[in-house]
Length: 135
Image 1 (cartoon, rainbow, N blue to C red):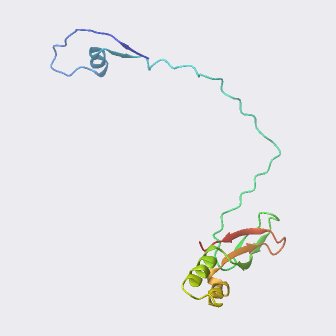
Image 2: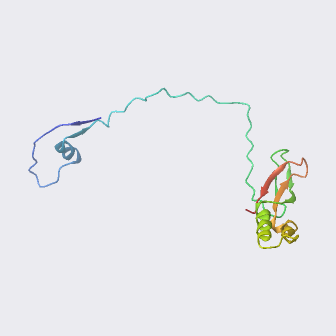
Image 3: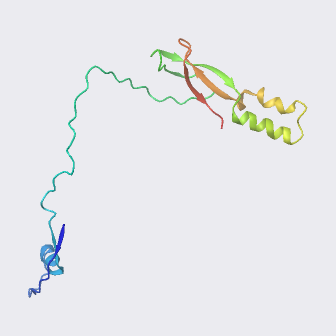
């Protein structure tokens, strides 16, 4: 809280006034030196026993199988990959159909693996590890 006080004391020395004198001269007296009590009661933190936290490092997925730990069976694996049609595949198919390739040529993106999304699976438990999306 700030209180305003008007004082008209003048300093006649050649040195500048101290910070406290300068703020008192302007009329500001701060009560910042007294700590304020908390506005709400602080919660007590109770330790939790019996829980185990498994940290899984982040793996960057791409087109090729990667070596990682499965989050489901916790085994060290090399992923099994499958290609699926994604947004990029469908957009290229639609673009080819709009430009006149509607007699089957618009289906070529479904045959090109580099235009499809790649899903990574665990070979032990078949859990989905992640998906590398083209778009």
